[in-house]
Length: 294
Image 1: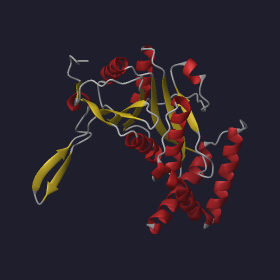
Image 2 (image 1 turned 135 degrees about the horizontal axis):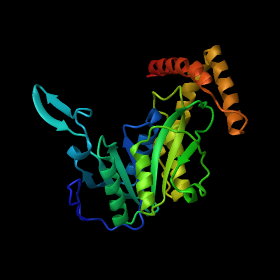
Image 3 (image 1 turned 90 degrees about the vertical axis):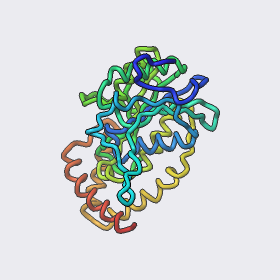
């Protein structure tokens, strides 16, 4: 496939893939605790992906907003590291072809970018698109992270068990790609994980693992992610320890658990009052505690 507008370039001969799944994780939009980026990185590492296509930086990236990093060594400007958007290809342990779209979310030319991704997806025979995301939610860390979803297709939604919401919010590029691929008859689904709002400033591997397990549920692609999974328990213990020493925060956690459990049962929804009351205070205390443990 040749791009007549020069928006992207192939880095290898056009690969021969068999019914690949496209996983999208573009930075710059909501990614609480970096959970979505960590999940995509684990997938990319395990599938041993390598770049096959790179998008033109000047077309899609505003370098005044995303300035390159200068590597300065003893006064010598040795290199500039530029932000790039790449499409990587690899294969899962079960032999499933996987594509990972990574890099910063485009700053401009969204329609052009979405068209390019949909054209490339058709050319490579993509059978499904999955986008990762993570957002802060009034959820306790003592409960398993909950997944929600988005898709332009009612048929796609009918086949998943994730929670659904009704809300008007600013959209990321992943939402635009959902529509672009849906228009080309490629099933597209956004998988979002809810991250306890008081831990969003630190890594939260439980959320990353939940996203990978969600990927397995809808695609059959299994990701061991041993490093992420091994950190879930210790992270939970560290957060527990930071809260157990404060009776007020422990009380807030118990109240949050009650509200959250009731919302799962359809009785109520954790509201902004609880979020404001517990989130900032708990976050400050937990982050201070974890810093002291390092």
